[in-house]
Each structure stands twice: as structure tokens, then as C-alpha cells.
Length: 127
Image 1 (spheres, rainbow, N blue to C red):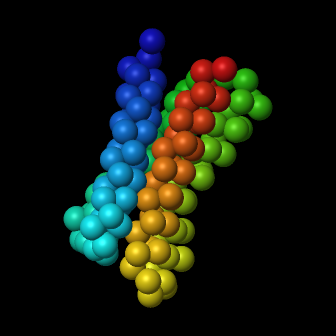
Image 2: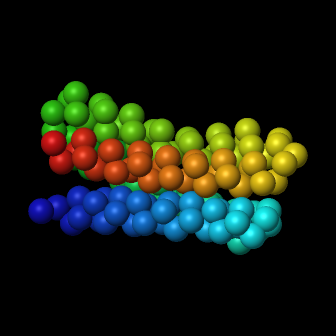
């Protein structure tokens, strides 16, 4: 097996766990009625960098001819694109909200959504 494929697969698994942790952390802030702090946003940036790295590594693998069936590769690329743009788009939209409690809950939902997107991308790649 290609070592880049192994890294790609491992980063996807890391992304799943990372977004679970980030979502639970946001829920914890909400339970304590505290707004998200710089540490949480810093971790969100790390999660975004993880998704960008995963995305670029996927394109390298696709360029090497490891894309497989074009229809499944298209869906996999679509999920990867959604994973990359979701967090910045959510930040741009949610940063305008005044209610910190609502913002915290919505960021938690976004993190769990990203977890599911990465899981679906992995399932599509395995089928």
C-alpha cells in the first residue's frame, strides 16, 4: 500500500476524532455558560489546517492515479471540499451573532457536521 494513502487515511481518522473533541469542547463551554475563547478558536484553526492538508494530500493521490472510479472519486472530492470550506464559512457567518450561547451551540453543531462529513468521505472511498 502507498504510504501517502496510509497518511491520508490516518489524517482522516485524526480529523474525525479532532472534530468530536472540538464539538464536545464547545458543548462544555455552553454548559458552563461561557463564550468560546481563543484556545477553542486556535484549535479550530488547527482543525482547518488538518482538513486543508488532507484535501491537498488527496489531490496528490488523485494525481498519481489512485482516484479509482470517477463517480466515487467525484463524491469523495465533493465531501473533501465541503470539509475544507465549512469551518471558515461558519466563522464568517457566526461571528456576526451577538448571542454567545447561540454561537457556541452552532459551532458545536458545525464540528459534529464536519465529523460526519469526514466519516462519509471515508465510507465513499471504501465502497
